[in-house]
Image (cartoon, rainbow, N blue to C red; front, side, top):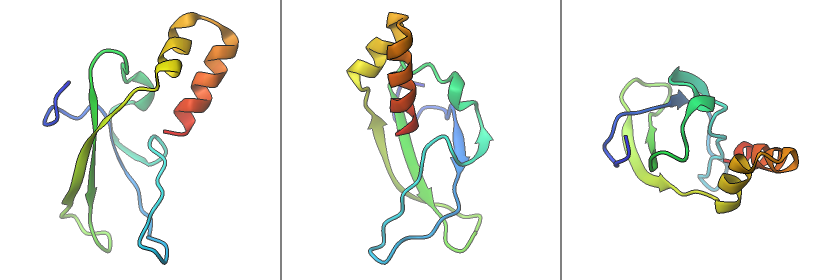
Length: 98
């Protein structure tokens, strides 16, 4: 945990296709859960990384597409710890867009 090759804390899969431009939109936390609990990730404790792998036609062999660090939205981290009910609603909305 906390480094680019660290252990996975949450793994999910998505089955989707690209649009006419070769782009796909996926909502993290809304796929088929393979391991971990999204709601239990301790976002403030360690840096986390998003690794994207792809397989064609539902295969079982995945090819690495890339890995990138997930960066915090400072206001969302503040609102989570503030204890303000209104701020929590904003934080929930922010989480939904990740």
